Picture 1 (cartoon, rainbow, N blue to C red):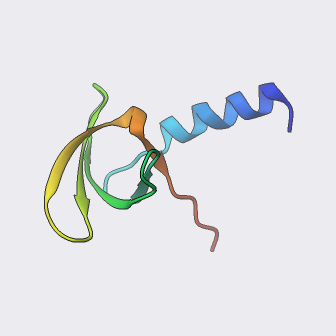
Picture 2 (cartoon, rainbow, N blue to C red; picture 1 turned 60 degrees about the vertical axis):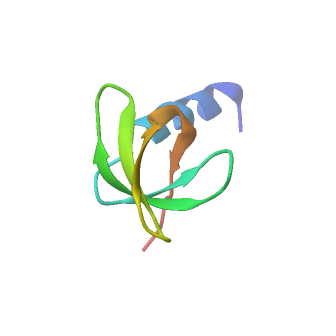
Length: 67
């Protein structure tokens, strides 16, 4: 994969954070559900163990599933 292809995929990842989908926290690998996604760079996520928290979109990457 070339550098330009990789950069375009990074742009695609940022654009695909959507409310109601699952995402992974980059640093810890935890899977969270996106409750609300803001255009201003902050999302509200719900952990599997419970609780909703604010987190920066920069720390999230969407989970892609193929059906």
